[in-house]
Image (cartoon, rainbow, N blue to C red; front, side, top):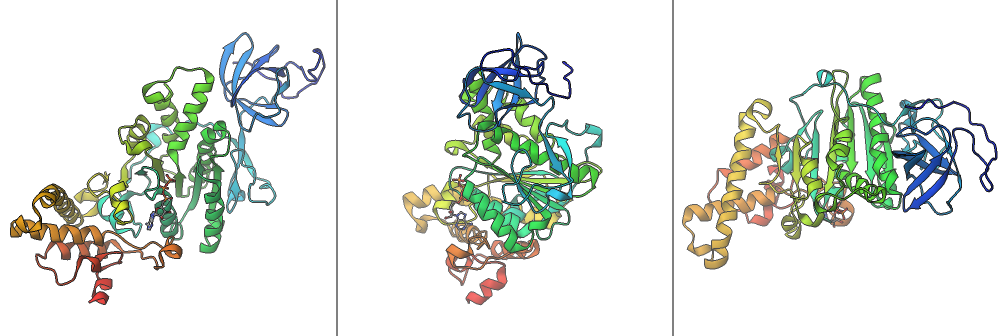
Length: 474
Ligand SMILES: Nc1ncnc2c1ncn2[C@@H]1O[C@H](COP(=O)(O)OP(=O)(O)OP(=O)(O)O)[C@@H](O)[C@H]1O
């Protein structure tokens, strides 16, 4: 490693280049969001922050002969070959502490909410090692969300990582916003929202929603959205983790970390990798996909000082769950809520696929025997119904045995009972949201599973809260 002097001296020794102190270099090549910089004196280290004018660059590879390859963290418009580049001599640092609460910040921890920069906060490098294995703790407690399908079939682990998987437009963002609405208010510690590569307007909407819900002052919002350079989308997760780690390690607080959308982090890594000249691997992804993802995901853990509970939306390209990005993300999670296009197309929101969603929490020792048995019975009934669907399509419902007909009646009511109106969609659905305690969800499912004849039509079970709402329908 090269020691770099703290002060930057400017001296002109090249025509057209105004700064060439031992720490300064000049642009040798520009390829999209990747810039090669040549240094005559000290060569920067990996992760050092460089500036070409006011465009920030982060060193990603050392090529040799004084040449480094860096990711641009802003549009490279205006940069030219030979332009002077200044090495700051250290990595990106961001403010950490209570000063960032209630703020909307970018990858540098700089404000994007129009208010002055957080003052007096300590600065910390965004690149940190994950905690030692011996410091990690596993918890066996669930985080109740009030969303029936999730609490019943894929309970979220407190201090664990949950993924919300789904293709385009099946309701990931709506679900994560509802989870914020239902959990942030009751959460005792702080919450961090990290927006990666999604629409910029969603950031603005969320900021307003948080203000309206009165939870903004215990929340930090970080955004590297789709209009930003791939380098920003790649690093914003590290910025969020650095702030989360401060609350966990220095303040001993519990942190709720919501990420929308972790797939965009992988995608940004693949954009950068292509520009860096690495050969693509499976399905065109970067060869370093697994290590890049692990470097980020391994930092999201709970230690004996505090817990980080994370909920991550995962875009699944072309609804293909075998996609390497989706498969790798999956391997880091303790619960996965899978959203299905078929359910969304039938209006069964939230479009949770009851057979594909799973959680390590769904064991009798954690959720209790009754919950476990009901969840299994619900799955079995829905799986049986899936098998009967083809027969019904070919021969009609009348050809089924009376036992099978009862299964179909139960399954169709369960499917509808597991839908629920959301608070966050109230404005366009014209309904008020419902948060359902798990005890009501269990009672409702148990009731449906125990019947073979139903007085009420299927539609009575659609978009309600607990069974009390059903009584209202009679
Ligand atoms: N719980 C719900 N209740 C009613 N409508 C919903 C619900 N969830 C999703 N929708 C409908 O589906 C649309 C898409 O949802 P959303 O934007 O959350 O999808 P997404 O999976 O995040 O999509 P993208 O991948 O494009 O970001 C919403 O605008 C809404 O019309």
